[in-house]
Length: 126
Image (cartoon, rainbow, N blue to C red; front, side):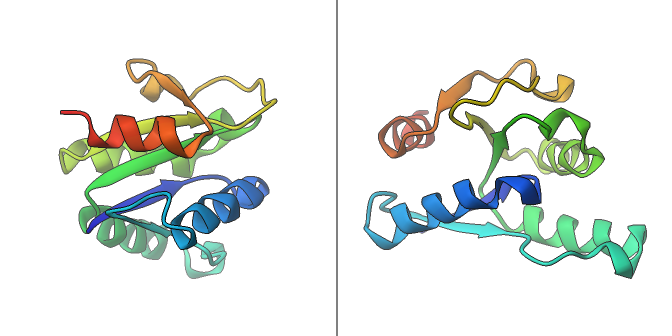
């Protein structure tokens, strides 16, 4: 089973929860979602970077949920940089009805619709 680290802003947790339901229903067969679900800001920047580094190093794929405010969050950029450093596959998934820019670091990655079939097809490609 391949691990997918879901990069997202906490305001978009409802979409992460929908993806977890896909997993429970068997719609993401062969994949397991991981994510950061705790507010780590009180631990300090170095501690946060270490936590993210270990989680991303251990995953096969970084999946970025792109919503209205994704481009405003430095942690998303850091997660993508870590994924690039570890040569991880990166997928961008557009949150329905959102209009926010994709972070510039993700410009070379196409956006997928927020649909389990499309995401699974892309994950299984190549």
